[in-house]
Structures are given as C-alpha cells and as structure tokens.
Length: 173
Image 1 (tube, rainbow, N blue to C red):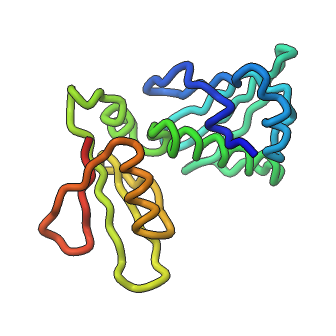
Image 2: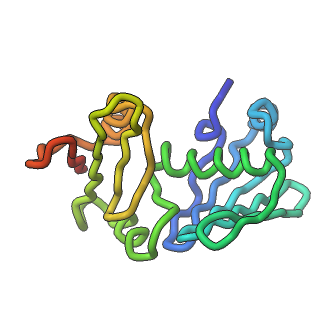
C-alpha cells in the first residue's frame, strides 16, 4: 500500500500554510489509506500554534477542521486520523515545520544558503524513553529510537555534528 507522501505533490509552502495537490490516478490508493473518500483534490494545512486543515474536493466543495494549542474541535476518529496523516506527511516527508511560533516557521523556510538549519536531538539514556528533537528552537517531534531519528534526518540530507553535552546531538544541512 502506498503512503500519503507518494500520492501528493507540494504546491505551495508559505509562512502561513502548506498546500498539497493529489496526484492524478491516486483515488484508489487514497481510499486504501482508510480515512480518505477518494474525491480529494487539494489539501491545505495552516501553520502556527493551531492547525486548520481544509480539504478541497473534485466537485468544488470543501470541508475543514482544526486542532492545536487553543482549539479542541470534536471530530470523528476518521478526521483525526486524516489530520495526523496529513501533518506527518508534511513534517516527515517534505521536512516542513507546521507547529510552533511564526519566528521558528520563518526560520524553517530559509534556504540552506541563507542560514544553517539546526536540529537538536536529545535522548534520555533510560530504556523506553523517547528521543526528542527541536528544530529552530521549537519542539519538532519525538522518535521511538535513536536510530530511527538519525535515519530519518540523514535521509533528508542532514549531517551529525558533535556537541559537548552528553546525550545531545546537533544535525545540520
């Protein structure tokens, strides 16, 4: 089964939102993901402390819902799953930061030649603890294992730089 990132293409990445377009002939693959109807044409996810997801359908309609710091919209499990899938697709496969302050989001949009992007990874040496990371000074996400974290960022073109603090690692492009 294909993953969402294989079924979409990035149309726009601005300070305020990310827009994805569903690739042609992806209807069946979307349905197989379990939370899409197959009539989706484009998806917009806003950035900041709160995220609003809007899905535009092929018949010209749209629907939206939000989550984040200040909002707790009661939605079905299906919409919750869809929202998480979209957010993780954007963060994990397109390496775009959608959560956080406007300043950290602006910093995330800088091209590598404009500024060095840094991701700080920290780990708790105790077994069963998550590996966390901060991107441009804001919490970015957790990983289950250190190897999973390192493999994820190496695949995105980051390299590891040593730090003086034990248990902390600095990743840069």
